Image 1 (cartoon, rainbow, N blue to C red):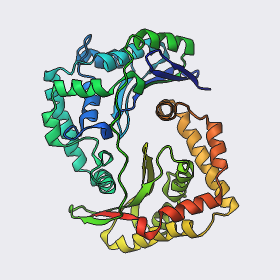
Image 2: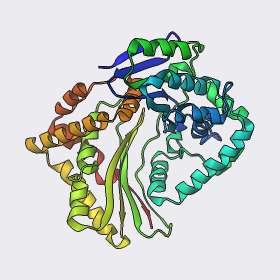
Image 3: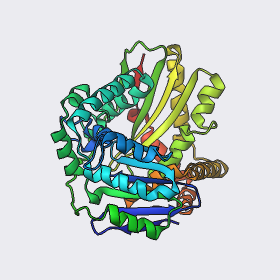
Image 4: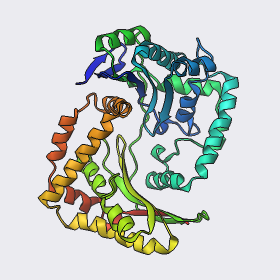
Length: 405
């Protein structure tokens, strides 16, 4: 059972209580790389690093030691549309975690000396990323899919931009975007909800209610493509994909199930069986579905031998064509539904995953479906819906291709 509350300044709270000795506490903020203006690319990610570098009340060491010193963890991540700063700790330290998160979010000072050091850290992160073609190809594919739109930008930004960031610019971006109307405090653990509300009032409630203007522009029209990039890799890295439904699209649930059938995490996914298990010419083959607020992205990734490229594409197209041409039988559709429901249940069994998923859901929808509600949505899907969606999105003239070789 999820408990909800909204503070007078618009900040939202969601909590699920359990009997665990560990509580996971996070603040989800509706700000990501797509909210950056030209020249600011990489700013949201850099701020995610920089909020740990000093506040009005603490230096960097004291921030890190506050949670780590009691055996907990303090971490953060940035996506295209969100930033999350979170802690995991023994449940008795809930107040310590909430106080620190509020201090980080509302009182960060971005000290110039620390910012200069952190630039080197992020530049090395960029170097490391560019040395990993299996990761880099995802961003290059997104850039080709979305063109000049902010959704196309690499979350890490560019070296040129990172070197130009200053304390003043960080403050300006932070105070223009990180407002209480864009925040959700998400908690999963042994935490009484009345106490959670009191603590959030104490540490977050004093912040002035401010609203920020959203600059999110609608994603541009999609044009399919085929590109090959020479990177002198030992194996060929291949991406096949297209645009897909966004998070508010009524087809999102159906496409989530379709993606799971095609190349989800299970060893019996169609691509894994048809390509890896049957022929053995790749180690990794998977599909992913990334829904954003106004668009989505579907991609199939594989690392293959260059000589297997034509056969790989033939097999991928064949599996997608089967889903487009042939309705799933009732037994196969039911099996696919039960598998997906089971995977979601196992994923939410990990309390950290649940804290993050409900925080994002409440931020996006102002409500979080229970597992039972999600199960009903999945079980209501029909074979015609799945087949029609596959036929619409997987037509040959809608698929795009990117290869590293």
